[in-house]
Amino acid sequence: MNHAQLTALGRALRLVGEHGDALTGTTPDAKLHEIRADLRRALDLLEESVTAAKPTTRCAEHPGGPVDTSAPDLCLLCETRRRAARRAEFNGPAGPAGQSTGTPSRYGVRGDRPQPQQRWLPELWNGQEWQLCGTPRRDRHEAELYLAAQRRGSRPAMAYRLVHEFTDYEVLRVWGTPVRTDIEPMGNL
Image (tube, rainbow, N blue to C red; front, side, top):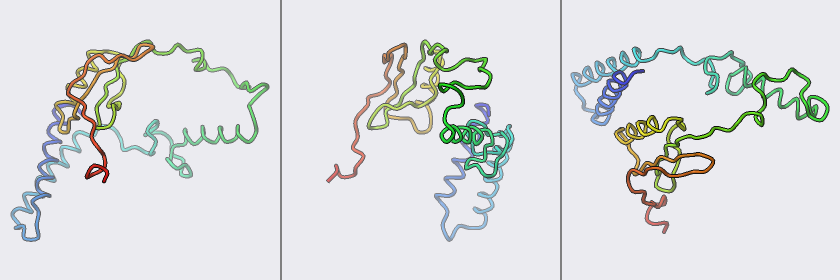
């Protein structure tokens, strides 16, 4: 979905939401026809925006993967991995001293791979603490553009910050002022 489609769809859905707020038991038929037209317009925009096929599984990792109806997330690939893990629990390690008897992975094991050198983490202030608000970025400029878009969004947070991760964490820039808010109404009385 490109930015123009996203903007048009957001505008159409907000308009439909406004219709829903104004809806009463005495709403005239002319207004209902107008709501119907706006709903059709929003559905048409959504139909144009959707490019991928409907997910076949409920798995975030393999949304279009093969289906296993007995799996909780309908994903055959993840269920195969879970079954192998359960078998390993009951049967013990796969080979002598816990080594796998299968062929070694061409990508190596986690300990053989170097850790990422540096990343930029976009974070937002949720009223209690800083939380990650997007995927970590390898490019600082891209992370700043992402945070700028978040600040211009329909529901911006109180404050944002960009944290540089390079063997340690360093806060690079903070937008806004984080204020701790009490989550209990009436001051926890």
